[in-house]
Image (tube, rainbow, N blue to C red; front, side, top):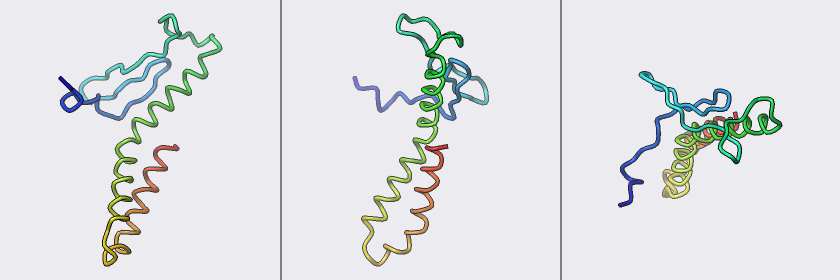
Amino acid sequence: MDQSNTVQPTPRPWLHRGSLIVAMHPEHGRVIARMMDIDGYELDMREPEWSEAMANAAHIVRCVNAFDDLLRGCKAALAYLADPPSNFHENRKETAEIIRSAIAKATA
């Protein structure tokens, strides 16, 4: 059975704390992922891979947290492009703002 329609990801926002990616929830936090080496050991900050792992964690968190806004921006752009000519210019400013906001969040 395909559970992709029933099982939802952990609610956002997600943050990275050291070698962990965590979800912040009003009632409890949840570890989403741990940065580990290829052998399954948690990375130590003295290892050369630490900086890259932290950059990867920050990138994952930024992408996950921007997902809803980026999807909303894509939908707004599609609706704008698909509008009949009479509505085309009315949605231009709102669509541009949605997309600007999504890009800013994804690149912060």
